[in-house]
Length: 389
Image (cartoon, rainbow, N blue to C red):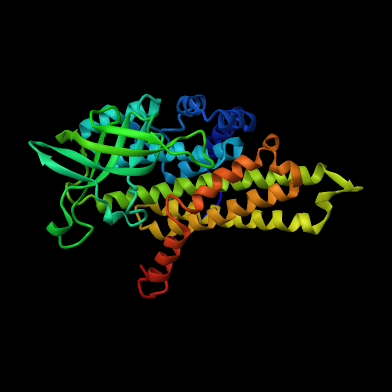
């Protein structure tokens, strides 16, 4: 077991850090205030080859792994973007890249993956539903047979970056509940055009992550072509879980980067700010909360690296990915809160940036999987306690 980065990984982190700092705190403050999509950042990420880190070389990527992607995202987010920037990786290299690389036809891979790496194709994923929430298997969106394809009907909620996406990964039922023996049966995945007859979306007003819109999505007899099926018809749930577990790794990377950034902002302020002759950082009441946040973020980071390394070795990693996400949500919550408290009144001002990082990071204690569901999972699978949901 080694913890040292390779020379290639060090170069990757340095590249990501450079891009992240080029579009730093002031850039994100302006984008947040305007509720504007950070298109310049994503272009720079693609031009630097960071979007394609985990995409196979034959499709224009670097052919590296999830650990390398996690390292790059951490550095990018710590440069100023915070956890919101990691959502752009969820949408594109995960919902687009991982899904297509593992489960799409060769024709779809050759068509879409090089465009994704270059930033010409962008993705979103339609999974969560108003009445199902975390209980994905209760989804009601249904794709009924229509000749050699399907017609899609239903609705989704909290779908990120729909207006900016060219393609949408959709999870839907292709067999009804009364047609299957187990709820995990009858689920299929499709990649369709966002601009398509019958597909309508509407923005959700929210407290944070203002640069990346969230939407309601409605499907009314949306035509799905045969070649748009991704993975196994009626048996896509296991494939969906593989996508979601890599999403956990990306989420955690963004939260670790956020926590690192906030601890450093808080510590810098504590070194410079004087109220009673000495810098406020000389007092343990200021030191200890920041030190505790530093400890928590390091633990989340290491668990995430373990999850990513297991993923790269094609070994089970869902347990570790979920634990890392739980830890990272707590670590980012503590780091943003304590940095704000360290700064006093200025921590509540937009000028000092932490309030944005605080607002944005709060989402990830709820999504993409809630803390409560992770605790349910650990209690059942690690502690052999009765299923509680």
